[in-house]
Image (cartoon, rainbow, N blue to C red; front, side, top):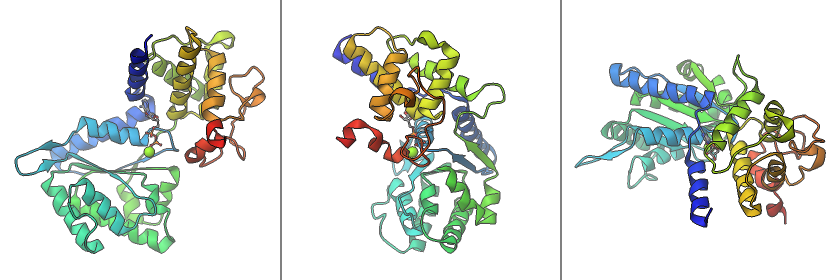
Length: 324
Ligand SMILES: Nc1ncnc2c1ncn2[C@@H]1O[C@H](COP(=O)(O)OP(=O)(O)O)[C@@H](O)[C@H]1O
Ligand SMILES: [Mg+2]
């Protein structure tokens, strides 16, 4: 393969959406909520929860691609409004983030209530049919219960006044925001978790394996299970990825690069073992590497291990190059 072919293969791999079950459930609910709104004007709301790397922002991107903005002579039409909630969000900064996405040239100007009324007017003018708040746990990360209650109240009234379906996406702790506000909680009766491992039919190991093989089918070289067999490889993949699509993708992309560098014609356990150390955890060697024969078959979630609760955003600290 020449350089261009390798680059194209990696790019295709990065852009491909794989329909793993919880992702499909979320996509179907979004589509159904937009269709219901178009037909009846009824707005249903959805909460999508998942640890980092489970596909929340990808879901937003997918929705944006399916319902793209387009221009009329006098204005832009935005069927869906994706709002990345700023860190330590306040009511004013949330409203500014929405105004910016709606194309308001002075999005940072005005009081919180003036901005809120502009949001509502612009949502109607741009014919917004769904609002998605990504990283919505940032709303909850600030202040005490009274602040949460105030922000919750503001969101409830925003939802009621825009009258369009909304989706809140965030880390599992986002659920606590809804606990403090009964009226908001009632509006989000539908909740979806993006984690694997919720199927009655399949184990989490076989779900990981299916995801790995689906992603692998986008690559230009074959996957092998080696002496482990596919079932055991599925289990090892679960421990190596914590069942999150982001890590399975990282492992495969890194294994592909290694395969091309070393002119190996397949991706099997030895390359995955190296990829785990290179890409996920530089201390993950021997019994701490899920692809090593001596692996101890346990979750790597203790202190200073890669799946320690809330550690994804610090993942670089586990990778060799960021330490050196
Ligand atoms: N359905 C999917 N198919 C393929 N790759 C996906 C899918 N969902 C997420 N990913 C990949 O997983 C990685 C992390 O996804 P992201 O949406 O940023 O997670 P989150 O927002 O939950 O932290 C990205 O590389 C993305 O391309
Ligand atoms: Mg995200």
